[in-house]
Length: 435
Ligand SMILES: [Zn+2]
Image 1: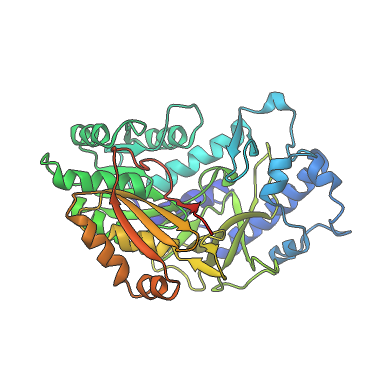
Image 2: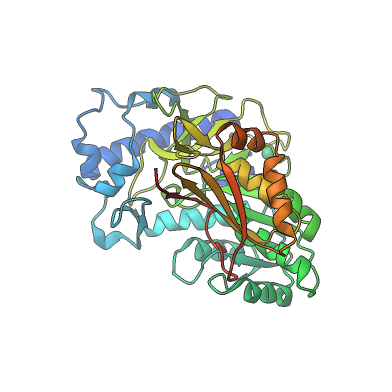
């Protein structure tokens, strides 16, 4: 493991320097890339060419000038008319479609070239080098079968840095996953918090013995403190958070050994934080919606794209010594779920409260609205755990008073089956009862 000095050195080489980059070096590189991206998008992409809301002059003199340009939204990607794609289809190595929640058939379309994919593999290689030793075995708990999927790109990056990645059977049952992990005895693991948390908790009680896993890379829009604490106790693992989405070319930002925010992938992304309601750009330290602009992408450049994730830019330099800017994550803007008279559902807190209960392997949350609102928790655990889950919610210092003030009942039930939500983000289901 190399620490962030190595990642900064790679950033320096990537942006054309022969020395470690200073903050001013990175700012100058980003300004140059932003101007190139804007000029390229305006000439090659029908969507950007035809936008009527561009200012008369759109070259940037300083980074903050980008705020004069219009924002791009998920709806623009879904509609894709005019197309955001900036190259003929024959130059695509990968066209990714992402189903959007809620409406059927609507999907976002992303488009990557060979060079776009290569940039992500290089980022994964040098990012993972900060938390994985060459020569060590790394378990990958992301789907990795499809070429150029996130799991596949991560495995290619790990192979390049000299590690030995092995894809886990994440589409089978929890018990199959657990026995594969025991056989593998990896030094490190990468996956979603839900997957890793469930595996660690199942190993605790199934009599097969626990593992020691030095480091874990977890990718999610928010990682609960109780998950990190459980992994530290059960596997002795130091958890490193990653943030990214298909729109960012998968990789986006990665935490360092200081665990105080995530260093942004500044070779490829320029981040802004905007007020989710007014779209005004917010200064460092203020929480808002994360907006990204791609810096080198040619297949489908994104200019000021609203991610729907919330966070803030850290105000102070990192203790690890890296000059890369950091983002502190704050979950999805779309959540918490609202219902009734402006009542809001603190989904992250509920997640944290339930996983803090010893013995909870996995769970799903259902909010039943109607005359009497009810929070139904389906837990995969020993039957004796049910009362502990109820108690953890009722006595939680924020969730408890909220349940009381909103008159929400709790029903904790044992879940049947052993594949509750193994390889996806935990979502709150909302079902509507009689009014
Ligand atoms: Zn750091």
